[in-house]
Figure 1 (cartoon, rainbow, N blue to C red):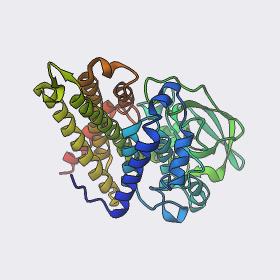
Figure 2 (figure 1 turned 120 degrees about the horizontal axis):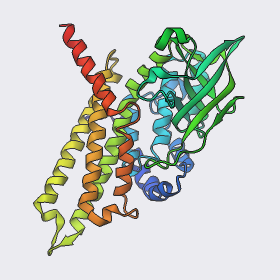
Figure 3 (figure 1 turned 90 degrees about the vertical axis):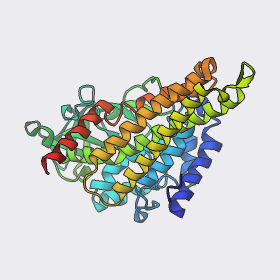
Figure 4 (figure 1 turned 180 degrees about the vertical axis):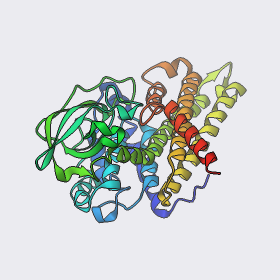
Length: 384
């Protein structure tokens, strides 16, 4: 289908696809097996000027938006959903600065991210604050010309590998969610450390660690926006990055379909390629329908966001839910089509099935997203 990409967007998509095919696909299974963080791929992306596609030109980026980010994530994820997270996770950590950073903060932190010199991460989730983000226990106490952070963030993508972290902490417990504030914390700050690298089911090439704050001093100029804006910073950021999760799911699903389709034409049973059997054809057709529908949904949502729309929580949640559910089904069906071969680690579809599962969980579980969608629908009805 022709999505009427601009020449620049088409160039970005083709370059990301080239990197995926030539640099990521050959090493994806090994990186998954070893749990290796893809520093070499990050360097390739940096050398290709891909790291800043969603960052303003004045800070060294391409000047694109959520759509350009999603195009890159989709193509990289087609080869490996885990490796793509070095890029996508940086976008998640960077968007709070793009949206709420002062001019001085943007001038300081965005250029090295745009160049690929530095990676970013987003610190919101805690042991008791997953779906309930308002349950944050990490604190930030004002102390002279700075803040003292104490607490632990859990399951942070790019944790330990990133150089710049946007962290949400409680500055006034009495105000509930209005008492949260967001800070930029740099790797190497005194009192800032990391937990062990998590041993995950999927996205194993992505590094996931705890962020540990033990009397970590953060200068006052690293406060994002004003005190009390942390929850808003987090929610506005996630509204813009959930289409990135959807794009990751889309890429994983497309990669699974590509493998299943290729295999179905090569695998002969009862004297014919299994692609000639209607049972297999229907599975392939359903995969293709869901994937193309997800792509339409994601691209349109990204364009809607980049157009300057003010409220898109519902659309962002919807495309994330639809694409991640489609990816889970597509990868399971790809394993089924490939049978015993699909179940073996030497073939790439079982990895895609493991990678797909997280897209239904992080940046808000699909059950929470359905709550968001329903509440927005009800709220919209009450306005009529």
